[in-house]
Amino acid sequence: MDLLTIYTIWLGCFSIAFTFLPLMMVLDWKKRGTADGFSSVGFILQLFMQCCWLRHDLLTDDMTNITINGLNLVFSAFYISAFAYYQPKRKYLIGQLAAWAITVKAIYTYVDWQTPEDAPDVMGTIAAGGQIASLAGGIYEIKRAISMGTTEYIPASFQFAIFTLILQWFAFGILHGNKFIAVANLAGLFVNVATIALYPIYPPLTWTVPIFNIPPQEKEKKSE
Image 1: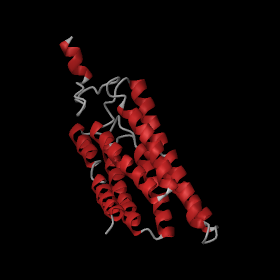
Image 2 (image 1 turned 60 degrees about the vertical axis):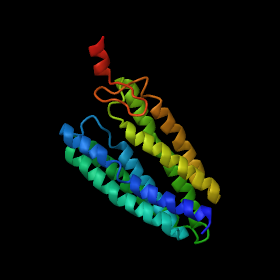
Image 3 (image 1 turned 90 degrees about the vertical axis):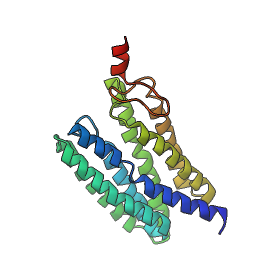
Image 4 (image 1 turned 120 degrees about the vertical axis):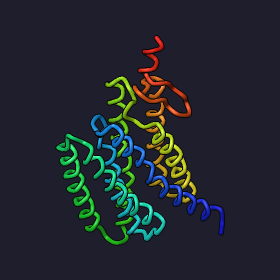
């Protein structure tokens, strides 16, 4: 077994373990008694991206990524259901899910029109583009944090974990010569770093940012 195969197995296991991380957000919603203030945009865009990559994996018979993205879809469905349960204002979520279903159906239909030889590359291009487009969710969160003056609703542990995951997938794309994966994850890395950079500028209201040990704004106001 060569080092690249070992790295692929490690990344597969790490990615599967990563799917459990949003459980921390669900527990936070349960503690607060609501998901009000949080956004579903990131979850819907992740669901869209996973659907695109899963179709590409099926076309290329990539069993490692079929397993990863298949499990991701199951967990995404659970997290979105939990969000809907704790979110009192569900009309935006319903609209987002409708748009997701229509878009995925249109993409799958378009790929079905391609020849068997062209379909994998066409779907790979769309999947990479979809992953880059899903960064709109991260950009939306950045804009939202700036307008609110706080990163209260952007869990730091989640962002730090995303950083380690994206960095490894970028390396995977380079090592395997998969330009679709490499480019998509490089773009994601830029947005992730920009999000993490917000913590010292717009600290959370009620919790301390780990690693950086940035105190919450409410504590700073009390000390003043």
